Image (cartoon, rainbow, N blue to C red; front, side, top):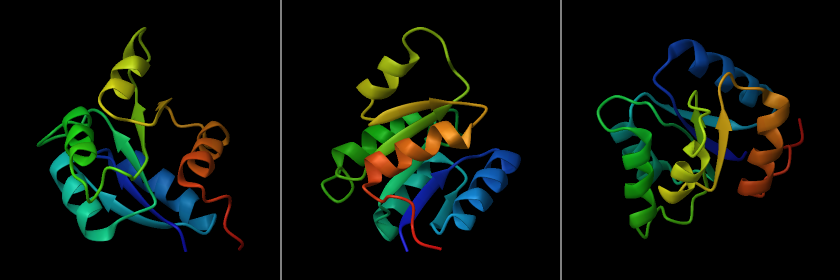
Length: 126
């Protein structure tokens, strides 16, 4: 079962997205802040990380920089999830090391192809 690390501090967003991914056959590991996200990525070695950018403890920008600087996690694709949809935000996410960018509110029909592309997962068989 493909493993996705969801780093999200908003309980409603976490619950909605994790349930939808589990229903599609993914194993979802949840971290609630950037520091925990870095720790869980090292521990669990997921195939993909969905990273909120506005996080407590350390933000998603710094968490991504740390993950991409560590040989143990640098190969894991990171998709930035953010409510920031201003000009330059996508470029800032990519500069921090994210492999792609998606805006909130999450639209699963838009996000799923990115998950499948960057994790090389495809949609798992039910």
